[in-house]
Every structure is written in C-alpha cells, then in structure tokens.
Length: 356
Ligand SMILES: [Zn+2]
Image: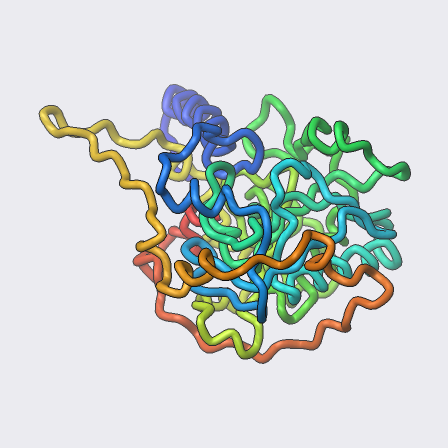
C-alpha cells in the first residue's frame, strides 16, 4: 500500500469506515434493503410461494440467477443444529445442501468443539431472487451459518427472530479481528466446512480470511476455498458445487489451487474496495437498475413456479440426523467460462463483490 502522507492515510481510513458501513448493507444478510419488490417482479413472485414444487430436486441456472424444483427443508431443529429467522421461510435447499449441513453440524460437534450450528438463510421454497439480503442463494446450493455457537437450550421462535448477530471484528479498527470474540473453534469450523469435496467456496470477511492465513497451522490444502468478501463478519456462507447429474445447473469457475493468502487478499486491505461509487458525470441521468423478472431467469423457472406444490412442509422436510444419507464425494465439475467479466490477473479477486 503506497500512501505518501498522513493526510492521505486519514482519508483512506475515513473511506474505509464508510466502506465497512456500506458493505454490510450490500452483503450482510440481515435487514438489508427491506423495501418491498414491485408486483410482478421475480422477487415478489418467488417470495410469495410458500411450498416447494413436487418432483425431482433440480437446480436451474446460476447461484445468483436461477431457481429450483423439488426442494427439501432442513428440519427446524436437530441434535446439532437450530434454524433461525423462521418467518423468512428460507430453510429450503437441494438435498445435497441439506444433508451436507446436517453432516457438518455433527462433525463440528464431534471434532471441533463447536456445539452445533445456527443455520441462517438457505433458499426460498422454489429458490429464485429474494427481496432482501442476498444476490445468490437462488438454486438451493448456498447456506449461511452463524459464527455464534448453538446455545444449549432450544431457542424460542421469538429468540430466533431477534437474537442479534455478533461480529468477529473490532468496532473501531479497520478489518481487524476482535481477539475477545474469535476462537480456535471457529477456525476449525470453517476448515471443517471447507474439507468436504462438494464444498466449492466459503465466503468470509477479509479480516477472517487474513486471520486464517496468519494462524492456521493445520493442513492448508482447502484454505483457498475461503473467499474474502464484504460483510460476512458474523456469519459465513457455504456454496456447494452443482450436484452430479444437475445438467441445468451452471457451475462457477473453480477456485485457484493456491491458498488465497497473497495478492487477492492484500487488495481488500487497500482503499479500492471501500471507495464510494463515483458520482455520475454532470448532465447524465443516473441509470436505475431494472428489476429482475421471471422471464430473465432460465426458462425452466416459469415451469417451476407453475408446478404443483408438495402437500405440506412436513412432507418435504429432510429426514433428520439419524437417517441422513451419506454425502458422496462429487466429481469435479468442468471449469465454466468466467461469467463475471473480470480480468484474470491483477488485484481484483475472483469473486465479484456483488455476487455474494
Ligand atoms: Zn449467504
């Protein structure tokens, strides 16, 4: 970081704090832009469906532009997990995602000193865009996990709505882990999640990624799966690959083989990612982004919306801990062409910030 004067550095810090605030609005999963979508938009339509479609589980499209059929629900409670924010009705996913979450919850409790998972948003019953909180989570292959351990008692419905998030960051410092909150068990939980072959990416705050780079002394093979992104300082986000046979699922380019602790991480500690957007040139009208319509999604998504529902939530709830099927390792998916249009070299990270 080449900063020449104290004043420049002060400006940088100001920008950084502004950036941190803005970032949590962009990529956090709580309370972000709670304004209602327009009637007829994909957000309004997918957000109003309360049950999944019958039939085989299929993701259609991309993590940030798609939908799903045949979703199953993670049970509200299991021996090693509790689901949060039940009013949002977002504990739906592809069976591969749901069984992975159950497996992670068991393994973390058994091996990592983590008593259980608090599970945040997965997807809506038929996937699709959400009116708040996420760019992705649309095809049942993304899930948010709190960095708060599951309490010993079952949380009430009210507590599940209101329990506040706990940031891992220091309040008045730039991208710095709070040593009074961070624990080795959290590091182990992240690396446990990264260890499963079907997990392709785990999104964390850049400060968490740096902490892992600086301190993780175990096997670093899967450290590259931890991807720095805005927000994600009180929860992390697990993304799995397109399951085998999911031919309508658009894969994301695999992460590079290195540990991700070099240049791409250093970029987050410069001012560039935190700079406010440039003001429009005088005389030009600001372009308001058009709302996503169902017709913008893969064609199959209209059929997914029109398909008959399962009979009840119970009928589509995943089997629970005892009879959860083992998660078989998945074949490595072929590399997709870069869909983000970002340069392949330079300080820009692989994950475009707007795609959570
Ligand atoms: Zn997420």
